[in-house]
Amino acid sequence: MNPDSRKNKERILRLADVKARTGLSRSTIYLNVSNGTFPRHISLGIPRYILPRSTVAQRLSKPSSIKAQI
Image (cartoon, rainbow, N blue to C red; front, side, top):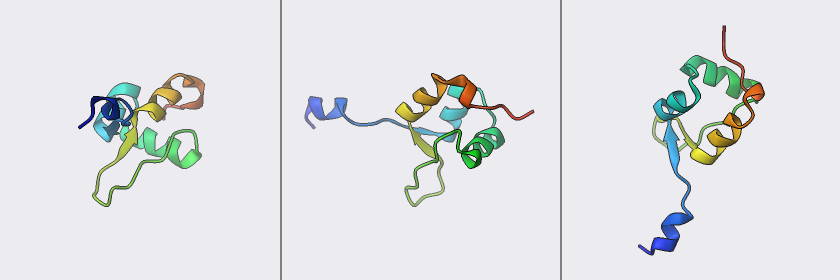
């Protein structure tokens, strides 16, 4: 594999990784997805919740757009 092509690949995060990075619970992530304040996951045809790392980073840069479930 060309080293330059690896630089352009988007890294994906599983739900556990998203929870660790955001500090949000699974139910809060799903609530924010349904409210449109958090990006929807990508379906790979297997039962996994994954997101591109860049979309999580974008949401973390705007913490007011993510609401924790109380």
